[in-house]
Amino acid sequence: MWRKASAAVLLALAVGYFYHGRPDLPEQILQYVGLPHLQTSSQSQKSLEHVVSAAWEALITLPAHQWSKVAVGVNACVDVVVSGVGLLQALAVDPGTGLDHEVLHSKEDLKETFIHFMERGAAAERFFSNSEVFQRIARAAAEYPGAKLYVGGNAALIGQKFASYPDLMVLLCGPVGPKLHELLDEQIVVPPGSLQETDEFHLILEYKAGERWGSTQAPQANRFIFSHDVSNGGMSSLEMFVASLEEFQPELVVLSGLHMMEGQGRELWKERLKQAVASIAEIPKDIPVHLELASMTDRDFMISIVQEVMPMVSSMGLNEQELLFLSQAAGGPHSALPAWKGIPDVGRVSDILLWILEHHGRGAISPESDLTRIHFHTLAYHILATVGGHWGNQAAAVMAGARVASSQACGLRVVDIEKVELKAPLEFYSSHSEPRDHLSLNPAEPVMVWHRGNVTFHMTPVLVCKHPLRTVGLGDAISAEGLYYSQFKGGQHL
Image 1: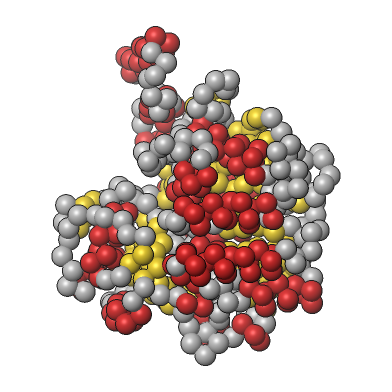
Image 2: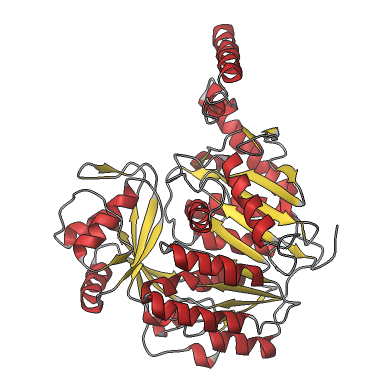
């Protein structure tokens, strides 16, 4: 045992020596001398998960003031979930090389884009332009052995999560067909104007960690989503959603589905986005609005959202792909980075979140902006970044989001420590460049807090499900849970 301990100390000293002499040494090396990698037995590793999970249960508390009414809109559909590799084989498509297509026009485009993201283990969503081909693929998916139908669309999924709390009234606006209406929680209020005769279907092609197809192997479990969805693509329910708020009187509004416009073509989305911005402006200023982002590929479209929509919302939720693409499109920090490698570096993520809030959130540069909160989530950890004292209970909120990610991915209501593992770096820097703080995680108090200017960061690790049963909707559940445990203080300061 002493030999292993001595080796660990020598390794740490060696890395320290080289790092001091070579500041260009990749920071990720710190992750490899962190606590998880020096564990000498599986039992000690398990104890870390146990300590984090027990700490969550002890520390996650509800805010002093809770929401009583939440309105959610506007994308809703039925998700058809199938094995991605299995469906493509059933469509008589042969494996090949990956190539990303911004819009899918054929089975070949679908195959290449699916492989592109599968080999990266990354989530993505694309619009399928050909209605006839899409309908044939959709029929094959629905008939594929083991295919499952679920509530789909960010708004409907967030609404479903909110509806799991009996003390919360939930309004959902979006294109709700008969199958979706049947699947929705009966506690959800759907305005008559949202009901339509047919459902919108989205196809979710899932793959498991380590799954192979030809020469492609998935580094982690994830999914690829595509659809030919005209109702959600045009955000046809938005005006009705905003109009319904006056009667419902919500304390919180959650908006999603903007990404669906992208597949409509530049001229259409430019015009529709102007109309959407005008509708959002009609929401009373005293009601906080949370914007849930999703996968996008058009930089001009993302820039329009950054400039026109983000300043009108109070809060925003996104993952690592969406965060980096936002920075690339809008010229933010680390925009030259083509993609994340492995677990996104905490310092780089922190830099981008700070830049968004300082340049597009409420502050000296944009004093009229309403944006004061960003909930960032990636597989291994989550960060909540907030401006000033506009939000309370954020330590509990970020832990609650991580806890639901850990349990829901395993198909459970509570975290089972035998089925999860800690993958977050236990030591990291608050920024990729100086000045910066070196931070360490205490598993018994699993929230690290740091400040940069007027922005406060709360970070917690995720106990990652070893064998996830379903990855779709995790981001929506994380954002909903984080909002449920958050308290909006408006213009007040802590």
